Image (tube, rainbow, N blue to C red; front, side, top):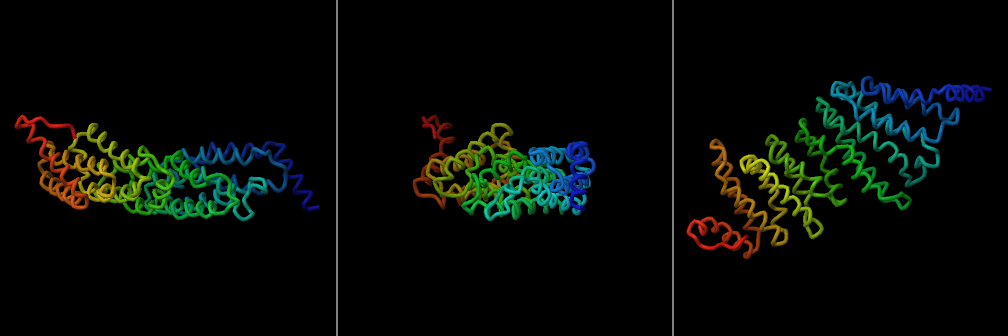
Length: 357
């Protein structure tokens, strides 16, 4: 009798449009009252066994949750109270997959539907946290949930033959769509948050990240405070990696550096002198053309006449040490080519014809 009564109650709620009202409430009220999201999802999850919900309920709930979390303002309790943040993240991980049909939940070994179902909404929450939360504790928790949680979980699921599609590639694409990289390197960028995000950048490298995706890292090297710039340089050095597979990525990075010089002037880019020292080892082992282009960049910056007087001596010393260290790690032919390039300005002054580098 009790189960029949509950079934009748559930059917009554669905017939009255209660499920639609809950989905609408998620989108409308979550940005201002984050507790609405876990409450609404929990009610939908409890309602599902009692009455037949439309087949689109899970997809609609996923879309509503992601859209709501994208709009979270910095003043939201979810971005100021670590407990509220934890509650929403736990709800997305546990309650949202319950709305999936049982065969899709991933209950069987290797099932990844539950992970995919909550991924978009969780990434929106993480992006909002690392990009807008004024509380460092929340930003650290968010990046840990992504790097040590989602990335590790995706690798575990992807290693099981029953996994559908390329889960790691899908995760990398979803991270970019959610704006997580821009959030990590935004106005609230912090060196410890970036350090803990290393597994994420390793994933992007493994999934053949483009130079455009890594350009914000170089911009951080050039324009962020010293501690953030240095950590960004470490991530960038590791992201461009070594070996033939990364040659195109390193070439794209050099183009980004040149574009930055053209857009902002040598003076602003020279602020990244310590970062260039960190990145240099990635180019020392590159093919000769790439290594020479990096050498030319350093020579160009050393020849700049627009260095701020207050920092010119220190910046020049750093760039010179980076250039010398880079050439010492390079073959003899690369050293000779660098000497030739360094002599070109003097040759021009003397009226000697100079071939293009």
